[in-house]
Amino acid sequence: MDGFFERVWDLVCQIPPGQVATYGQIAEILGSPRAARTVGWALHALLEGSGVPWHRVINQEGRISTSKHPQGYGEQRCLLEMEGVEFDEQGRVNLHIYGWDDPLHLLREPEEVS
DNA sequence: ACAATGACATAAG
DNA sequence: GCTTATGCCATTG
Image (cartoon, rainbow, N blue to C red):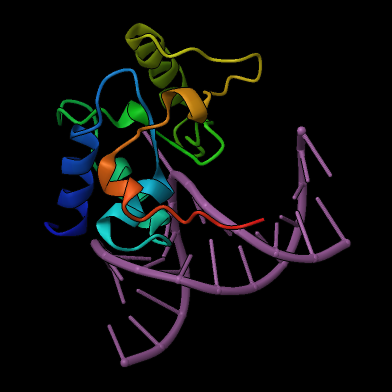
C-alpha cells in the first residue's frame, strides 16, 4: 500500500491550486517517467474524502482521462473551474498555462532538440 | 514467480 | 484528429 501510492498522493497534494499536473509528470518526479499508469491507479485507489486533489491530475493532453470513472469528469471540470482553470471548446486545459511548473520537474526537463 | 489489470504515454495507420 | 497497437510500471490474485 504505502510506497508509490503514498508518494503519488503526497505529490498531488503538493500541486498548487489553479494548476494541473499530468500522470507522466508525477510519475517522472516519483522516479519512473513511464509509470503513469501506476500513478493513475493510485488516484483511482484513492477516492473522495482522502484530501487529495485528484482533479488536478489529468493526462498529457490536458484532457480528463476518467475512462472508467465518467462521473469524475463532471467533478474534475467543476473543481478545476472553481479554482480558476479554463476549459477550451474541447473540454481540455492549456497545459502551457495551467501546467504545474514544479521546480523538481524543471530539473529533469527533457529539452529535446529539433 | 506468473498472469491479469489499470484515472497513461507514445508510435504508427 | 482519431483509432489501434505496444510499452511501462506497480498492485493484486
